[in-house]
Length: 51
Image (cartoon, rainbow, N blue to C red; front, side, top):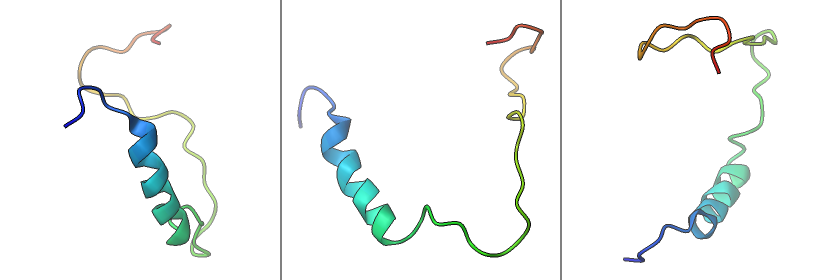
């Protein structure tokens, strides 16, 4: 096992497999939508100015 993680060596292979399988292509089903903000998490109180 390598001492350091090199994501480029692994992610490129997986990305090509996902592209070949059309995982990023939208399906023609349903209406378009947009999620304006992600749902809050439960690790703490969110407040104005939360980054």
